[in-house]
Every structure is written in C-alpha cells, then in structure tokens.
Length: 426
Image (cartoon, rainbow, N blue to C red; front, side, top):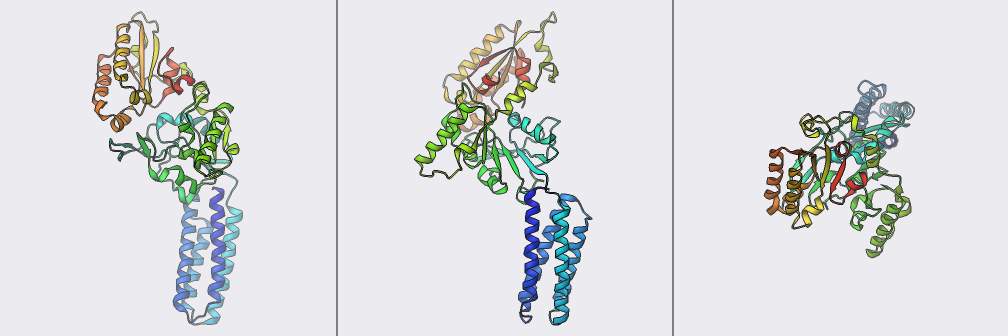
C-alpha cells in the first residue's frame, strides 16, 4: 500500500469521528440535517471499504467492522426521537471508529513505496527499463508498468485514432492496463515518465489524462527521464523548456554538461517570462545520474538477442560466412525539414542494393516517421510509403520497425545515417 493511501484513509476516519460527535450534539428537531450527515458518513465508509478491498482483497476484519459501523448509523437514524438510544448509538459508533482507525494504522503497511512507470511508445521503453529493474528488485517497492494510450495527429493538428502499445513490451515486463490503474485513488509515491510534450508534439499526443500537468496532481514525486540521449554533450534549448521538464520534481540527465544546459535554459525561460522559481529550484530539479538507454546498450549482447526468422537469410552469405550489417538510421527531423531527403533515401537504398552480396542493410526509420509525415507533410507521405514498400518487396535488406533499437545496435557492425541520439548509443 502506498504511503499516501494510508494517510488519506486515516484522515477520512478522523473526519468521520469528528462528524459523529457533531451529529450527536445536533438539535434532534433538525432531522433532515441529521439524516444528511449520517448518509455522508455511510458514503465515506463505503469508499474506505472499496479502497481496502481493491488493495487487500475481500473479507478483511476492517471491512467487517465498517459494515457494523454502517448498521450502527442506520440504528442511529431510527432513534432520533429517543435521546437516550440516540446517544447510546453515538457512543457505539465512536468505539467502532476508534477500532477501525487502530486497525488501519497498525495493520496496513506503509513501508513500501508505490512506483509507477508510464511509457507510451514501446520503442522508448529503454529510457526507463534499468530504473524499473532496480525498483522491481527492491523489496520496499511495489512497482507497476502502465503503458498509456496516445493519439497520432491528423494533418490539421486534431487527434486521430487512439493507440495502445501495451502488448508490444518485452515479455519479462509485467504490464498493468491503464484502464485498471486508478491514478487518482492510488496516488503513487513516484511516477516516472519519458514523454515531456503534453499537447505540444506535432506528431503524437499522449492521452490528455496523462499530461504531466495532470500527473503532478496524483503524486508527490514526478520524475522525467528523457526518451533520447544528447549528442556531443549538447541538447537543444527547446527540449529544456517543455511541460514535462517544468512540472517534474526531478529530471534525470546523462552528465554534468547536459545538466548545466538544462539549468541555464530553464532559468533563461523563467527570466524572460517573469516566472522565476515557479517550476522549483533548478539546482535541485536536475540530476546527472546517467541514462537508462546507455544501461540497455551495455546489457544487450549480440549472442543473447532473439533474431526474427525472416531476418536470418540476410545475415549470411552463400558460403555461410556472416555478412557485415549496416544500421541505416533515418531521423524524423531530417525527413520533415530537408526537402531533398526522400531523394537521398532512394539513392542510399540503391547504393546498398548494388552491394547486397557483400553487405546487409538494416534500415531502421524513426518510429514516428509515418505519423509525422501524415501530420506535417501529407503531400509527401505516399512517395515515402512507396519507397518503404519497394524496399520490402525487393528483399535485399532488413526493414526494422520493431520497438527494439538495441537489437539493431547489437547485431550490426557499422552505423550509417543521420546525426541523432542513436549515434551516442552506438
């Protein structure tokens, strides 16, 4: 049980104890007011009982006592015109509430931290995985991975079809449906996110219920770990002034150089907008603890990865020797901003086709390429889709649109493509 839930249950019980004393001292001629207060007390008991059953199952002693308490409330409502019986019921209720409070205080553990990870793209899970592994091994933590739904944007900027990638995560990661985990009721101690954009991403949007500004209401510790790693110890200023950065209590970055950039850019933004200190103390917000994405690279070994059967023929020459594998990485930024980029992709693919006997191309486009093209450059989408279709049909290389970038890194020998965070991982 999370510390917050126990605290809230005890707070509710204290209010019920206070309400009972208030009801006892009410003028018994105010029958409608008394009945209204008794009904509110019963509703509070039902909420506590439901919370206990959802956390610890049915049939607990405390839930039984809450049922007895509700019966006493009913008897009290029937004895309004009998002062002696009315006061007697109030005394019984006071004892029942005291017992319920003691059982919750001493019987429910608050030693564990409830930690929730909220990834949205399965391909970006590597930005959280090593932290999840550590938390899962800690006996003081109750850990949940709750993939959240997202929308791809239409060309007019509106939200399109909702997507849920909960079934695309590694089998060793236990998944909890976002429909089953009630953030407001459970109020986890720590929430981890890797998407900082809220509504300001032109390609996708996580469900508005999971914007960082909303999540901040449901926890005392919101932690943002970027889904990317910086290149050449630099990060664009736009990445430093996003909602996930603003509303997070902690932001985890790779090293001290990157941390300084985040601090400087946040302070600059606050000064320019007259909101100094609104988003917390920058020195305490940003922590240079490394990136889980680097942890994942080190953890993933070539001999241990599972290679799809349809990839196998591309990895070996006719004499059985292993061919050199080139990881071709095409980025979202280049595809959207460079007018000649599609022509360049065609030329690159043709060059590797000419050398297919000696080299295998593993083309891995950015996972949001199609969605971004549809939203930002719909007039080029069909041409791009044709290139992808032809590449697959010609069958001289691997097209990798799986969530796992680390398998591509592990099985390849050479990196070729755009300047991106994948270069740092490589």
